[in-house]
Image 1 (cartoon, rainbow, N blue to C red):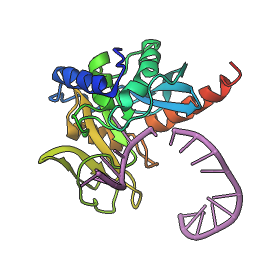
Image 2 (cartoon, chains in turn blue, green, yellow; image 1 turned 90 degrees about the vertical axis):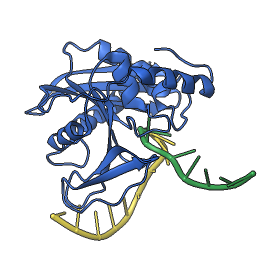
Image 3 (tube, chains in turn green, brown, purple; image 1 turned 45 degrees about the vertical axis):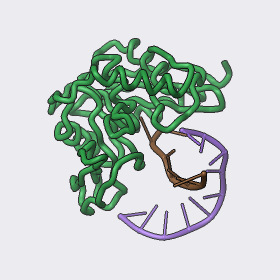
Image 4 (cartoon, helix red, strand yellow; image 1 turned 60 degrees about the vertical axis):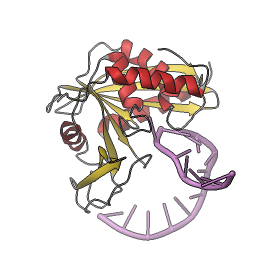
Amino acid sequence: MTMPATAREAELIQEELRSRLDLVGPGERRPARVAGVDVAYADDRLAAAVVILDGVTLQVLDQVAVPGRVAFDYVPGLLAFRELPSVIQALERLSVTPDLVVCDGYGIAHPRRFGLACHLGVLTGLPAIGVAKTAFVGAYDEPAHERGAWSDLCLDGDVVGRVLRTQDGVKPVFVSVGHAVDLDTACHNVLALTPRYRLPETTRAADRLSREALRSTSGI
DNA sequence: GCGACAG
DNA sequence: ATCTTGTCGC
């Protein structure tokens, strides 16, 4: 992964890579293997985790954790440069290839339309979507209170994502396309991955693994 | 100019 | 992201 020395350089990389995005998809509606990705931090240490679940049973098929060091400060809009180096390493060590990667963050709902999920998708060639827990960019109306209810996430006159309620009465999540998946398919998959909780099982599994990996490497 | 700002 | 107790609700 090309690592920029400055924020300006990072923005240029995003503008450049954006031309390689596949925004057509449509992606698999019933993916057999779905990957969840997350990164945990402690001071300058970090642990990236990737967990692959069976798309039907949601059982774990494979998982990889990679310890590392923070090499890029957090800057809103440039999250990929902080998290992806280790995440890509973890993806390369998987024994099976996922049909979909669910990222913690945004895809094209981004200041330059190239969020973490887009970046991961372009670099790996894998279909990817972003599922974020909080608002970042875009305007939206509060979706209805039932699971499955949603509203458009709009930015500069474009629909860049969907604010989706994954359980009755819980805070909605922000879904946006990353690479090689369309928005309908992305939301359909998010609902399939949230039979019980607000966040996708893939995200929950990767979150647990990344934290555990941080702890188990604290002595190293 | 001032604040907001995925994780 | 991470620092953190109790607390409301199912």
